[in-house]
Amino acid sequence: MRQVQIPQIAPLDTGDTELVRRALARDEAAVRAIMQANNRRLYRLARGILRNDGEAEDVVQEAYVRAFTHLESFRGDSSLSTWLSRITMNEALGRLRRQRPAVELDSLPQGALEAQIIPFPLAAFDDPEKSMAQREIQRVVEHAVDELPEAFRLVFITRVIEGMNVEETAEILGLKPETVKTRLHRARTMLRDNVERKIGPVVMEAFPFAGKRCERLTDAVLKRLGY
Image (cartoon, rainbow, N blue to C red; front, top):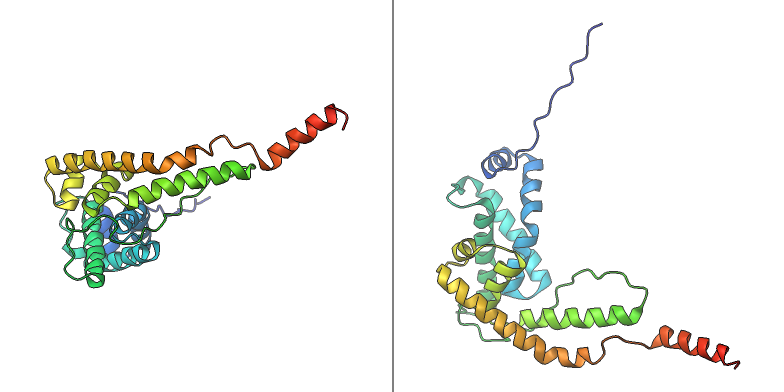
């Protein structure tokens, strides 16, 4: 009996060159792979500049459209991720300058824009008091990151949150490696001081014992005492 030949589909090569080649040929799987690999990084970079969730998402969309419509200009001198990061940062800075004329990366004062909160998912807790404490600590940390001056915040997000190395961070931000190291050290110091200053009231509410837990213990003791 003659065997049916099943066509073999080549697996998606995740190398930059092959992904770009496929994307240029309008291969949807390649375009999707590029976006899924870079969405979080680009969003965080855009939000680090704009400090607004909705605008950061808009910027990432615009950056992708710009990148994919000019994909033939990607030469491979840097990684595809770095190339996309530069486009996203330029798009975000352009939007920021339209909002605030003549703004420069290194000249933004601390708190220049109202802080917005990154909605990180919370672990599910049965105890609403623990959930409230976790949300409060999360809020403090997010505000502290948002309140870092622009130049330091971008280095912190790129190096610490996104985990890029010094050389890649320097390339994306157009800085010297020594400057990246100095700004990261300064960012960590400012962040630590800011969090310590704000965390005091939160720590006072640590290990909560109220609400249902308090009622349950009280009822148990009263029952044992015969009330």
